[in-house]
Image 1 (cartoon, rainbow, N blue to C red):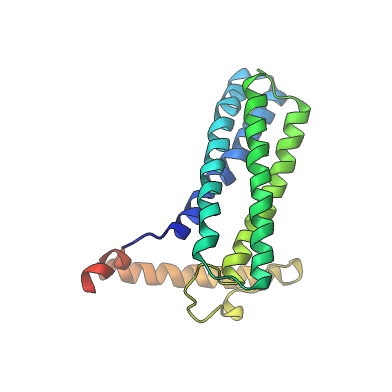
Image 2: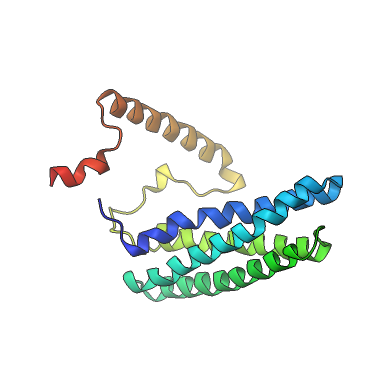
Length: 193
């Protein structure tokens, strides 16, 4: 099994996506309750969160050179990249601010929340690059819309039904695979080739 450079970025982005909001949440809880232990945990986590964002961004900067994109995907990619570079700078500033203060200021928390909102938008754009434009993906025939309905309030029942059905089906396939001792077939692909 080989790993290509452009495949590293998607596995790394989950760290800042979790660590940044977690750090801010710990700080907010600490500020609201007056508990220094929560604020210390938030303060310790933010530099780790910022560093993880920088590492994910570095891998992300390498990825575009390895993939083919059309004009629309290119525009999405540029927006995704540029906003994320701004967010890396923001989290670096947040980490510095937090290192200099025992208590998170309201400005710090507000900037952090704005960053989390922007970060979720850029994560959405990253998903669009993959799931809509197929960037970095060897296409396998696209998407089956009936198995992946649009997530909207007006069709939430359909979304929940398809999710439950797909979950049951995936568990059945997993159980069958485990029963056949086929737990991680991709790991054995190179042996078969």
